[in-house]
Length: 332
Image (cartoon, rainbow, N blue to C red):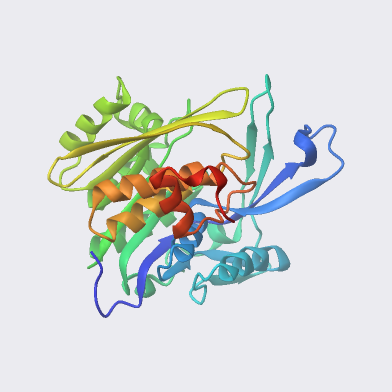
């Protein structure tokens, strides 16, 4: 899948924002201080890929403000190329307010994304020419990207994907109980049909395509509904005690199916797990092996739950130790 002459292995596209979390697992009502972290599916995937040794770049628009530069600087710190990021003078940075749960209280999230620099920028503001200089263009279709306010931006992404001469990758997730705006749903279907690599969740299959059944049956849906794709379906169960039980299935373009289970993990923070899985899966796909892609994705997701914050500080050595079963005392 690697293409000689391309400047990047992967270019990711999507909005970045700041996550604010009360310290000490407090609720917002009682909190006296907050921890801030950069977040966003495309941002997290770009960082994960760079830390695995791939050449990655991030396409987005941010406010040309201290908060916007916080996003850019953190991504650059991990080796991601940010020269194509559009800087909007005075632009707003989106916020996610996250309460980290502790048994019997579950975690909760609120998004404040109205009028952000990314949404206020023209749908054609991103440098799609840079995206064409990559082996893979990876598009983030997770909360809050699937908001109706982003319909024009998603249309622009679909147009670019259809005109691309490189592989298109999609990360798709729909929160429990939510329904997509009709215009957004139509574009999402177009993007999924265009993609050669698809990472999605069981709940997205349930919400969008009415899937019912066990996770291993999801492979059959993906195989019949989406032809000739490297595809993975992810499912994470989080208990009130903070234990994550992760499973995933993957399908090759020829229809061969694999399954991987990470087992029960005492989670520190689950926010970056899906973005981590996407980066690991993409890394494996770039080696032209869906089986190893599933292993790398599952290992990356498990490792991401072991550290606070959505950014994943893993390395290839960490992932290989996790896959080989020697990762209980991971080196950081």
